[in-house]
Length: 244
Image 1 (cartoon, one colour):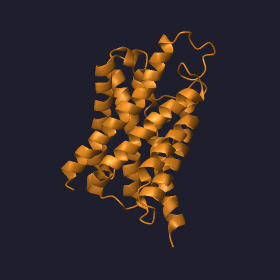
Image 2: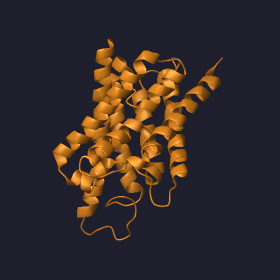
Image 3: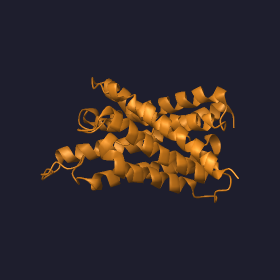
Image 4: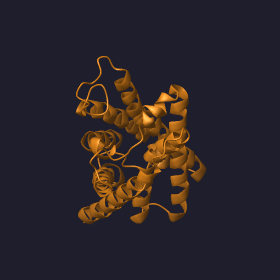
């Protein structure tokens, strides 16, 4: 496939991810605000409280990611994540001259996903739902958040290497396994960092929120450093373990 087609596929794939994944988080917050009776224990982020909300959000991400992998995987590889692109480049599986185009496509797609979600839902998508933006939860330090994102993305990339990159993997299961892995990670670390695992996934909502005066950019380094470090470490470790 030409680079232009792969660029467009990555853009569309990341658009789908951000519209439906963070969109689900924003809707959860909006439902919670309007829920009757309101959540009396202030647990979790929405009306269900606790892991119920995170499970629902995780499944939205899981289904969106699975759909993207099965639809555009054969075109662009369905990276839809700068950390994945960088990890594949670091292990010499992706050409250097295509890293920047892929990341630009992912950032554009993520931005369009958030902006069009805002257009569909209205101002409360940002003022109440934050467009599903990620940020450390109360009591979580900057360093703790980076560590949690690194560990979460490590697991994601380790699974990607095993089920999608390794040519010995059984065919046909990559989309399902990767999607469910993301869903499971979100359930676990969602209430720590929002569980981004993906710089583009955080970039889109941050950009959309900034258009209405909500500034979360001070947290953005968390979602660059953590995911990239975790993904690169996982890719190199998998290569070491799988080498015959």
